[in-house]
Image (cartoon, rainbow, N blue to C red):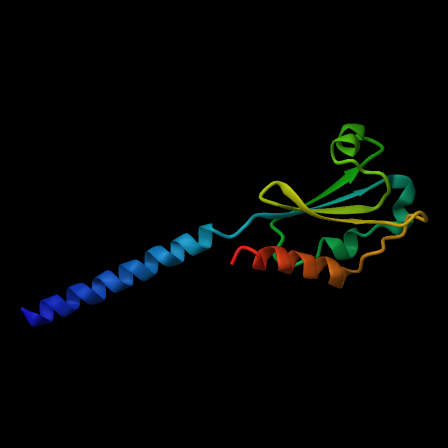
Length: 121
């Protein structure tokens, strides 16, 4: 009888661990990165490094010349602009200066992504 009791406890412990692992996997935030720019500003394109960020599930590029509604919706005043969304909510924005050059570096953007992910814990 004692052996069956131990087996049952071990089984319950494994099931608990399995449930916690599944729950932890689904609790991770969905991170999205969107680059807003225009074709005429291709010399200041940041997609090469912006689209290589870690822990981003979705990348998107919006050419504001062809999508004025997106420009208005996200209040884009200067390009390029990088917006990070977490679960479809804007959590960070990086904008260029008046000469259309991105002020933020790849490391700064990645640090913000890491901070957003850590804020869940």
